[in-house]
Length: 79
Image (cartoon, rainbow, N blue to C red; front, side, top):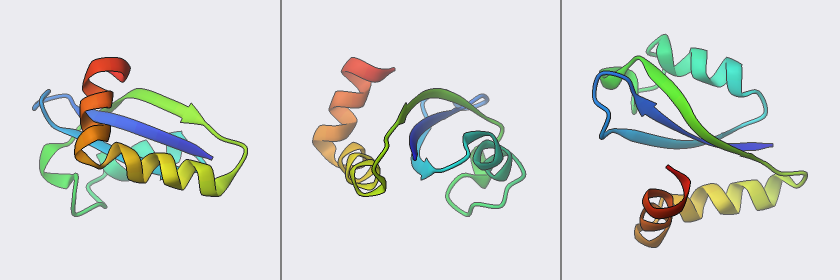
């Protein structure tokens, strides 16, 4: 299970954090415009990902990265 952060190529201040089992398929999904949250800012590039053995831990980390303190952590430590 992967938690990933992608950045818009054309709008480099736009980030999206997500969860997937297959990061390549998920990046293609975003770049094809299939996500309402990311289609306006495509294309996207992966700038960070982290693998977890446990699905629940991955989902918890994704949820944390979407909080205000998680965004601060992302900006300071991950990107």
